[in-house]
Length: 299
Image (cartoon, rainbow, N blue to C red; front, side, top):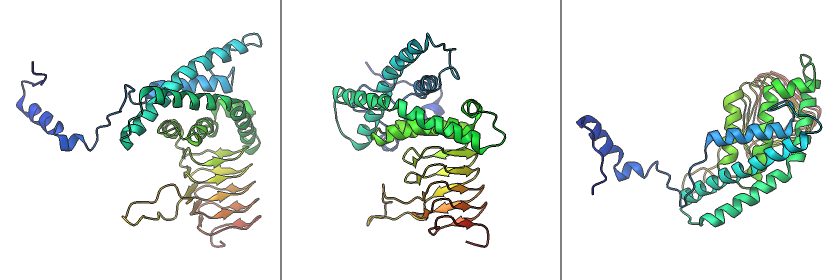
């Protein structure tokens, strides 16, 4: 029995034939080598909602009392384990398809379980970092009335919650999933932080729209950025065949207690020394010594 499907409209049949052409399909078709599907945004959204309720009980999700907090956390963690394990497995299957490898489902499942447990083990430390970020937001913004307000309302906290989770998964070499989690925050806040970026404690982005932090950026403790700041690459080295060299350190390093004001652009593997201030709308491509004040016309 033929499995081909035709319509009653010749013009549509012609388009279907062209879209099914093997040369066209091979350019865009991801065929996973297992029964796993592509990662699902709806599932990852639920995972992040449950993790947010775990990290900040009482702020998100159901009301929590002292008596119920243990049940609340355990129930959410159980769901996170099952959902995240499956999504990480989908991420590994995607990477296998791209690299044309053929690990079986059991191997992918075991790797996914190990990464899921590794993330869950770090949740207390992630909570501690986010609590410091919330305090930094409160102390750094005169409009903030409490650290709780920054947790519930501020785009910096929304983004850093996603980033702290995504960065752990990135460090565990989980493919695809960390980038999706980061892009969820990017779409919501306009703040674009690659999951590979290393960001120290007590970090705050005031306002935030248009901030870009590249993959190999390193940001020290007690740093503050304003809207429109870019920590980017100055150039992109190429291999002998002309392709871009992947994985090299190409983004800035910010020391501790650094403030970067709105619209500033810092490019390349330059170091901004401790206690430095980078003024608004400046362009920095060289190292800045500790304690420096860089403003327009005086770099």
